[in-house]
Length: 348
Ligand code: UDP
Ligand code: MG
Image (cartoon, rainbow, N blue to C red; front, side, top):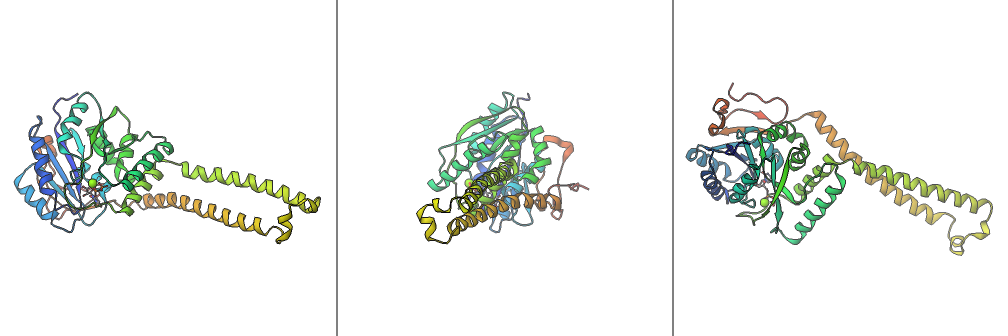
């Protein structure tokens, strides 16, 4: 394995004006100390409406290693990672959040493990700094998805990782459709391992992941990687048919052969009223719930069929690093590049 791979650090940012400077300084400093450079920093601005874009273009002017990709609007963190991967030219790619919760100073540790011959080295989060509610939700989610999915999705591992060129290529092909990068990263296989890295608190600003976005990500994780919710519908359906069958036998028997043997309370209320009420509301609930589950999958199929890109690039500034001198991707600021499907060649 190449001992000094040229690295690309891929970072999604959304309204991160408070941290962008510190982010770039710290990443640049870490990369300076890693042989094999000049390395590359790809920062994807996910439709920020604060000063992120301005700060990015200033940074690009100063540091030729930086490529800044801007989306036409906010598409979400996972599409932003997918876009960053498209522009990543390194032999290995480091994926990390832009709020410095993933400390750039840990990149050498990831790289050291990577150089032992792994294709993927991901950070396992220890000592999360989030509040207790968020921590509990994360915990539940990772345990749930571990049970539900056939792919072994490593617990408590986020996007912070280093991946090889071949894994990056596979992710580029697949990532934007799945929108759950760490799932597909695990699904591709090869030699993977995790190292424990403490997750720092945010360096500034507030979380850009609203609860709604977080639930959408969790749903993407579950429904893209498991058919168990659907099978659960079959199972519960079968169970209720079984129970209903028993009730039918009992009701028929009571009605025709032994009306006097009915328990006292059942003779006081109109026959079958309670049973009907319970059965109707329970089964209606179960049916609606699983209609929702089926809907989740149908919705996903619908989105796949439409084949719409999961992001639109409005502009790209900065020269790519010279990892692959023959693959220069400098573009003018009006190039429209869409994620998924065939990408236009930005240089043509
Ligand atoms: N992010 C993004 N688009 C979004 C939301 C977040 O690019 O729509 C970026 C954000 O700037 C950060 C990373 O994704 O670099 C992780 O987001 P955040 O820290 O807000 O999430 P949390 O760590 O709170 O779950
Ligand atoms: Mg964060």
